[in-house]
Image 1 (cartoon, rainbow, N blue to C red):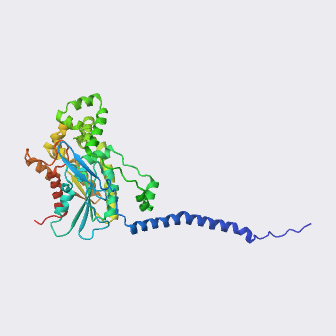
Image 2: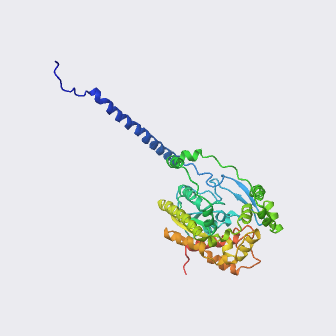
Image 3: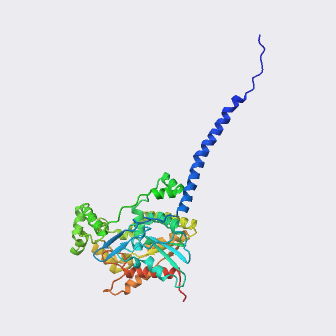
Length: 404
């Protein structure tokens, strides 16, 4: 009988496969993590060394279009960087203080010349000192608080401002927040833009050439009129012939009139929307303000929110103009403090300063000459050059208080 023997000890050959397997997985892990990180670093380095100037930040670079309406006729010129402003050096200002004004059409300067928009008024007034002040107009018509986060990112990345001003339109921005859902950016896209900003920037397609506003309005009004119900058509026919003629000839903002036909009580929503509506508006605005504050804090930039006074909330004359377009605007709106109180309270929670010139605009409206230009275009509703100047000067006094 064969004697039992001790178990044969494992040989080197039997030990090798596990070691090779571990090395293989380590190599794969290094490739999956290390190579992308290395390429990401190279992408950032190329971006720093190449120094290619930003283009198409908000608009197609170098565009030039005419903005014609029943109440104004101006040319809109877009810079090489894609802003309604001059080109600015990238990075922090070489000297003085640099501000970026972010907002919608009121900040863009709808209906006025570029140099008449409130950011340019602010730039010229400065602090009343010899310090150099730069104010970059980052206004975009139709923008809402849901858009301001990505606009802040663009401004911080390219221009490193000392101060970021967010122009939030009184009442309207709260209404838009309830009406709209913020655009969700896919996680893969966000990760790609973070790791490879230079590559994604180069691959981004150039936007189409800007078309004249009147041409766009003509196309839009025909479509929007076709969507009106019989009751809304009847309401539309009740407008004055002058208003309908301006609308149908592309000389009046079609969305303004269409909203008046479909939602005539829109301006009163912050007051009549009820607790659920107001709670929704406050929650969404609070989320936006926190995002803005976090972005500016990380970039070591100071954030201030400017309440942009909207005509129906401050001026009986402006309220009358909106009634002529078809809105139901009670005169009591000019006494309400609800819209500005929401902004002030939520910004206070986030430690963000607020510039609130509403009382100044209301005082001016009470004493203005009825035959004068006023602060608002009657039918269009945006600031006249006088209204732009009033806001720019008010913001300047708030940022750089004058000695008594």
